[in-house]
Length: 177
Image (cartoon, rainbow, N blue to C red; front, side):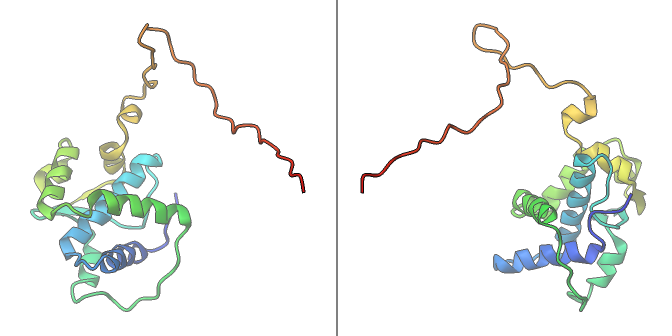
């Protein structure tokens, strides 16, 4: 299945530009955490589809895409930028807003908790975290258990029926000119 974005550089540069627009510095390791979370949440939300063509390994400092890590070692590489679809930009913005204020150590603890059954995350020996593992780590609880959502009930115990929202009928006014 084709990734949603053709290059991982586009996503990494988007995060760097977003940090710069907010006058903050994005540490190299935190960038790697954000990329991992973006890939994982996207796989969880879209049944294992990759956001970007990245492979993540986990070492003692946490997950990283070794190719991107090396490419960004000396700073932002000089690569052309490609615009991404609006849907992807909204998704990346949600990842940014969710994790931007967290320190890398907190993000590492979150990944350890999410991946408590993943061998690569537990061993931290440079092994790859597969996309299927990421999908299971970040899928919503309802998706993981493959069950129907809970039935909402009123205070009397009656089931709440979903009624589709419809806009109100437009009120036409006449002007007396």
